[in-house]
Amino acid sequence: MDFSELLKPEAIKVLTSASSKKRLMQNVSDLAEQAYGLDGDAVLDALLAREALGPTGVGHGIALPHARLADIDRVLGAFVLLDKPIDFGSVDRQPVDIAFALFAPEDAGVDHLKALALVSRTLRDTTVCAKLRANHNTATLYTILTSYESDQAA
Image (cartoon, rainbow, N blue to C red; front, side, top):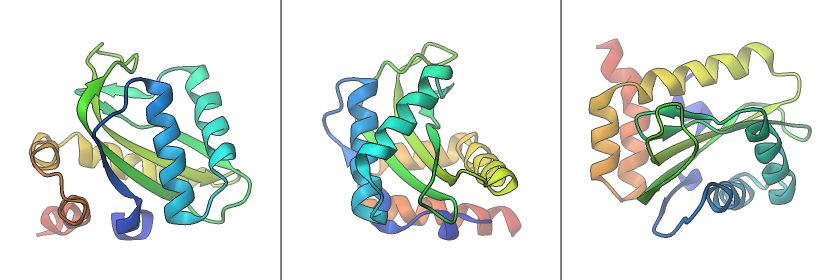
């Protein structure tokens, strides 16, 4: 699995105003609806239900919200870069400015874990995160994310 299978260029957004975790989740849901035709309300409900189990803020300004959905047949992703970091209840108590959301079929076991591992591994790279934070053009953000695997393979 790689980012080009997981993420469409249309599923990337730079947010200039997300004032709360819930507002960010609403924006992610709207993005999933626009990019993939998903039911935005169902996405929001699933993200909030997962978040109620424990925060998906993994530290270093990064959140990996994820949810299982009934009406999809493969794992999908959405990337959001925030102009202003927000409190996300992260493990290190740092505000979040990078969010990569994953949406998986209800029975996606291994594929969901592979996607989560790919995103996590990529966003642990401080160089990648610095490049993402320095660019607010969605096409450039897509290129940074999708070129990571080829850089690692070289």
